[in-house]
Image (cartoon, rainbow, N blue to C red; front, side, top):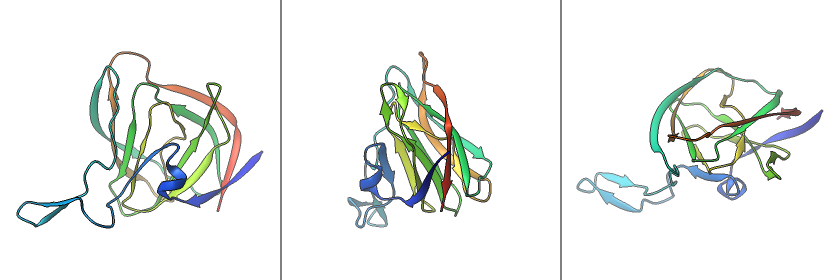
Length: 159
C-alpha cells in the first residue's frame, strides 16, 4: 500500500488543483459605509452549460491514519467547499494522468478555510477530521454527466 503524509495547506501547493478560499491579508475594498471588508472574487464558479447551485453537505468524520481508495471528479464544473464549523478538515486531490487519477496529495485545511476545485480535478470524498461537519457547497447542476468515480489502490494517509 502506498503511503502519503497529510501536509499543511498553502495556496501555492494547492494552485494546480484550484483556489484556497480565505480572506486576504487586506481587503480589496470597504463597503457598507466602511463597516464591511470585501475580499472580492476569491474563486471562480465554472458551470459549463448548467447553473451554479448552493447546497449543504453533512459528512461523517475520518481519523488519521486514513485509507483512501476512491476518487471522483466533476468534468463540467468547479466545486467549492466552505466549512460551516470551527474544525480543520482534509482535502485529498490528485493530478490527472491520461484520464485517470495519479498519486494523491493530502492537505490539512485550517478551520474557516474553503477550497474551490477546478473542473476535472480528481479529489477524495469530503473528509472532516475527528467529528462530523457541515459544508456549504457551490457546484454545477445541469445536463450531462458531471461525475466520474474511480477506485484506486488504497493510499494510507498519515500525520
